[in-house]
Length: 418
Image 1 (cartoon, rainbow, N blue to C red):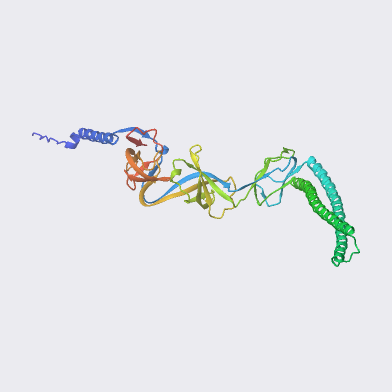
Image 2: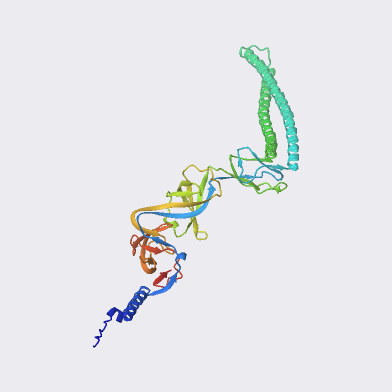
């Protein structure tokens, strides 16, 4: 009996599995190769910064760093040479008007004050004595004038009586006697007038002498008062309520007249001095609003002055503080300021990429949907603030881009983010 052999049929997938696997592998390799096509640089994800494009309102601002500075500084200088005996305050201390700040000593000044005081007393005594003498001389001369006046009046009465008798034809008086009487009247009158002129001249001379002596006395008295003020000011006092901004002198130091001893500022009279990059200052105008950040408080302000000079690539912008100053506010306090330039109601914007400039086109790297790659694309920007920049063309809301420095791969079209 013959045995029938049954031939088993092998399924195609088992027969050609190697071919299928190879094809799938090749396809996968092609897909992988296509995915990494044009990738010529790999960047570490931990070393780059990214941001997404946002649609909405954009506030254009300019930021700067600076300090609070006194709007008015009151300087106190040495009014005379002296040696510092005592220092009562230090920089940062609060003082009220009249508080002692420094105490100086100057023995020469004290001696000069004493000598000048003695000189003034002597001149006052001389002036009083000379005044009495002048008044006595004036009284003597006035008495002489009055006596001459009486002599004239008597002589004139005799002349008038003789004239009356002669007019009536009574010849009891000779013509010679009458003529002598007339001449005597003229003589007495001239003597009286002469004494009157001497009296007026003497008054003028006395007045001039008195003025000159009083002027010399006032000069000495003025010197005396000035010396008294200098001696009193050897104790240097605060000229107003405020904060001592500087005190660099120590006990035992010698100071000269005119040396700056200290500066006092008012804590409620401060402004913000902010340094702004010169490329951004052109957008700032007087009157623009600003926020001053003291690290613990935000204070409203207003741009009041823009310095015309550029120093180390920055321009100083002064901001007047509008709100009540916080308790931590004091001169030299480091602050940060944000100046409001403009509001754009509806636009696309992104955190400002490195080297991106306002109203310019630049190449930036846009990330793929899975974030594995970044392709270089041209983007046109609009208005820019310190932290954000407007996107006009090249990106849509939700797109993610690299905003950190692309210098390491800026010549590559596509980079891999690993």
